[in-house]
Length: 187
Ligand code: AMP
Image 1 (tube, rainbow, N blue to C red):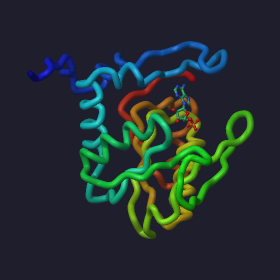
Image 2: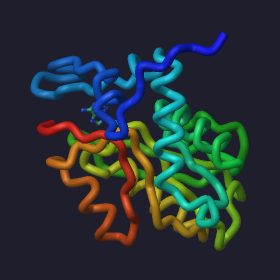
Image 3: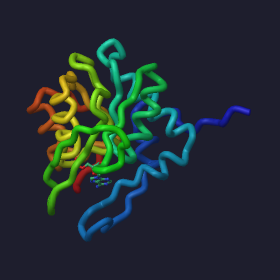
C-alpha cells in the first residue's frame, strides 16, 4: 500500500522540519543538523532526492561523487534517480585498491579523503554530493581531488547549507555552483 504523504509544500520547509538539531555536538557551540531523522522518513527522503535531482541538469553529469559517510546516502539516491554511476570519496585507509588522496585542514588538525585511482576519466563531469555544506573545506578538498584526476567539477549538491559559514561562497570562488534545499542560520 502506498504511504500517505504529508509532504505537499513546494518550498522545503517540510524537509527542514524533518532535520533534528542537536545542540553542542560534537563540541560546545555547534548546532549539529542531524539528517538521520530525515532519512527515517521514507517520503521525506524520496522528496529530498527528487528535489535535488530537479536542480541538476542530467546532461551535465557523468558521475555522482559522495563524501563519506552521509554523503554516500544522498549520492546513492541521486545516482539512481539520474541513472549515473557513483564514486566514493572515502576517509583515509578504507579503499582496497590503489588510491589517490588529498589532505585538508580542519579547525584543529587535518583530515584526508581518498578515491580509487582510475575511478574517474579525464573530462568526465562529476556532481559532488554531501549532506551538509558548512565552511566548504570538505567539498573543496573533494573537488580538488577530482579535478586533480582530470574531472570537471562545476556543481555540488547538499541537502543543507549553513550560509553563515561561507562554504557556498568558497565553492563559487573556484567555479562550482552550490545547490541545496535547506538553509539554517548560525553555525
Ligand atoms: P565543512 O567541511 O566545514 O563544509 O563541513 C562539512 C562536513 O562536516 C559535512 O560532511 C557535514 O556532514 C559535517 N558538518 C559540518 N558542520 C555540521 C553541522 N553543523 N551539522 C552536521 N554536520 C556538519
